[in-house]
Length: 101
Image (cartoon, rainbow, N blue to C red):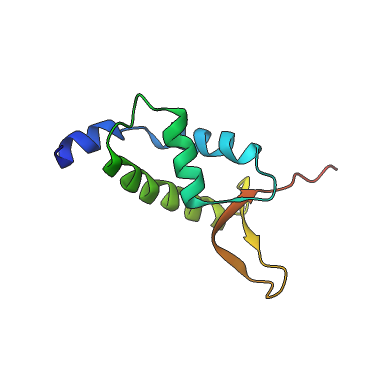
């Protein structure tokens, strides 16, 4: 399978991919690793992703979206904090808790 065919298979716009990430993270309040999020998206939309190489390219896009969203103040996504070191865990993300005012 060529690189062009792979790029056509993973051609989801960023909004659809971000919505898929939110749908996956809703069911994991403790957070998930980038690999687990990617595999859930691949399994959810099996018709779009047929080749094994697609998962790696999709993982890169998911990582970019999560890293970008976690840095924004108004984002619904945040990084999981390690309880011992009080630093973010590498590759772990979760949905931010909403503050009720």
